[in-house]
Image: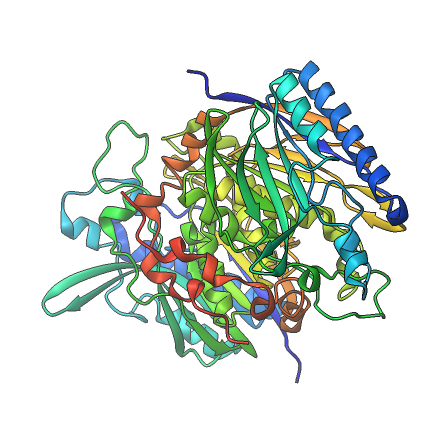
Length: 312
Length: 312
């Protein structure tokens, strides 16, 4: 049986805020995603990867003191009325997708907020869910910043850990944005057998705490994903929301990375753009059975500090 | 007090085997290293980093069934008669050094073999010792290979773990060769505060299990070290034994990498070559206090598998 999956990375350009016409904005974003799914279908794609928080503008850039205003960016059900067309299109075309969105769930009378991704198969069924573990940014309003990055305020850390799912002929893993900077993310997925990791991101070019690093954002983005792919022998599909969104420049350079760490496809715009690659999941073995054969070469007895709480 | 250290990466070209004239070969290698130390002194260097197994040819490329023939490549004391001139030169010039060598120690009537590095200060005193944790290669003779890589046969895994030392105005860490491919190495050192990691390597260009990756050796070498530097906000000094040694091509491209992951100095030959850079240890803070602030952003409670034994 073939272990080749044609994957599409469906970068999105900016999504305007328009919070007063929320429904229309979501509908517009969904329409753009469906257009990308139809392009993907025409190019033989079986699995489309969308960005993090793909349904709205990247709202953690603003401080909201009105909970209702904040919660308007969150999905209370998935699919909901505005997102159901994505699932219908998946079923119609027989294409799966990865989607990042803001998730609001009620548990024991408490609202809980997560930065979430789901994996949907070609029948339109949700087969996997991940909630972002590594939340970047800050918790308090910091008016000195040109834009806030309030993920630590608006989301709880993911409570599902790092998981994998059997789908698309192999073992699939999910992560979100800042997770890609942490080598532990890739390792946790690879130790569970992940062969292809999907990851959406929203990454401002400007990093207010150390502006001298702004020109390195693209380098760091690829460096972490390429190293994670190689050191774990897995495909990595990293997909941006890109371009100037509400005055804030977001990194593009969405890419598909082979288990050798090589970038084999990359977006060349900051707009809605589809890139594709046929990913042979068996190529993970070139790495995982040799140079990074975990059973032969890892020395977990020397890694103790990694799972201990970091001194504050 | 200044936290800037001028570091020299002292790449070595090939060292011939000449096992029948062992002493002369070691003396020759030491003479070459002393020449590099004198060059370094003239360029203001305070700390010179030499390669892994810097005193002899890379002997794990051969299968030896005579233990005496094998043990001839090992040092029984450090300094010994042939290596003492390195320590004398360090004291004379007030320059410290990192040196990789094969270490043979007797414990409870048993010979133990390690792939070891030491850190020597500008008074010629050994201030730190590390024994390689991640031994690559194979344990049994595999005659189908053009060259063996018998590190797993000839060495025990290091029994000292990953340590750090206060020296040269900061916190120093050591690792060896294949350790650089494993993100756990950098993380273990960084969690203990390492600001500058020294690493020597001997890396054949030809990787017999997957020859299709040979052309990627240089890319993989830099990818791992650059990611490790950035993801841990530390300086990394990677130093090769380079060139065609006994018919086997060894990777060069020794480099000094900033805490941003940028290569700031690189060797341009496959011979004895010194490259230098002034490393400001305070630049680690740009990374470690912000994007990779471990206390704020790590989620060790989700990393459990990393310290568990890998299923075989």
